[in-house]
Image 1 (tube, one colour):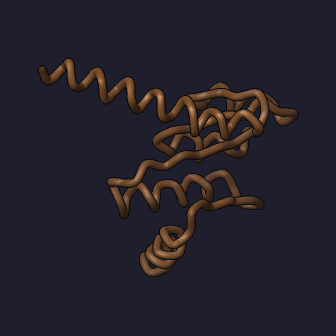
Image 2 (cartoon, helix red, strand yellow; image 1 turned 30 degrees about the horizontal axis):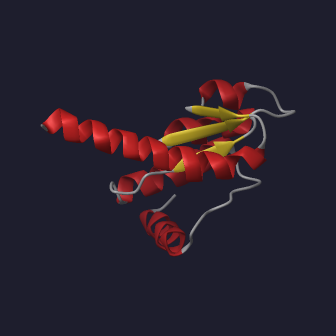
Length: 113
């Protein structure tokens, strides 16, 4: 919880392509997301969770994805996007993310014009 510890976690996290957090308390997961959001406002955070313990992390991220699972529907109810299985994650990010980006870019061209 010190400033040096948060800075160290941020620096190590930025050297990684992704971060998988397991065996953490819900508030610790949310704190990891908030450290990135506070220290680099240009980064977009994505949180993926499938249970009630992931809800604070999903709510703290820019984009939250809830996975329906055995642990209940709390993560799905608090997320921006809900998927049924983890295998749907790759098509969601690669295909639909690109399409949404292109649609927004096209809309902005007409909006500015």
